[in-house]
Length: 345
Image 1 (tube, rainbow, N blue to C red):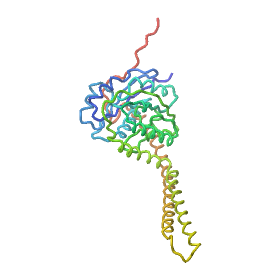
Image 2 (image 1 turned 30 degrees about the vertical axis):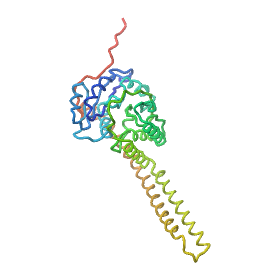
Image 3 (image 1 turned 60 degrees about the horizontal axis):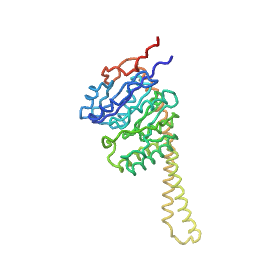
Image 4 (image 1 turned 180 degrees about the vertical axis):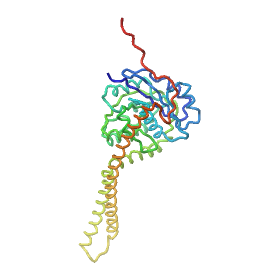
């Protein structure tokens, strides 16, 4: 008989003293197919006493950063800690109670049944009232770009309400300092993990986003994450495209100069076409070299990620045997377990 599954719900926090209580109270105490539930709060340098509130609430584990390191760092610190704490399933939710606790059972159901490795809560952003028209359009555009980049059918790529099994958690690494949402989906798709979507509803808005302050900032930061992901995972396709464009420009301009030169060798016009064409050909050669170099670096990155994957597995096993997890404060609160079933007489 298989051991009961252990679920850890991680909640990244930055000055969430006023919202953490409602989020914590809304979490499910038991889920079908799950043997125990524990909660991990990652305090990302809060200055309002969020960790103290977490202890008073009875949160099981706490990670505290001495200063703010960003959502991506908090998320990955939580994933590492959950693995070392022996989690079979990890759920990530926000501290502002944006996501409904009752949806967690639906979120983890495909993982419990072995039908998916990653499950993402689809907020159905077109139906969210406080999202502006521009934001809804950007959400659709961003999800479409991520679907193409990852080769998956993810519906809501920026949703932070998601669940991972242990296999997926071993594979996911975040290289940017802004957010984990987009990059981890692309990684999961490239690693061959199965990604599922679960429609969810959200609670009313309680505060403004702390991740970005305006739509232009959102575009700038998320756009750079997507561009970097393309450069990391498809360097030949990305740089190769620019190399081909530059090559075509160089050949067209060089051909233009040759046509006029053949017609009248004594006429020295259209030298600008020759100069620009030669420059474009040189740039095409250099960008082509960058594509080859990027492909070599991508191969090395894949080997490095495989090594990190194995190290993470060993670290989780060693930490489990030791009984204590470095950098994690365990409060001693008892895990939430299903009510005992009485045997029929």
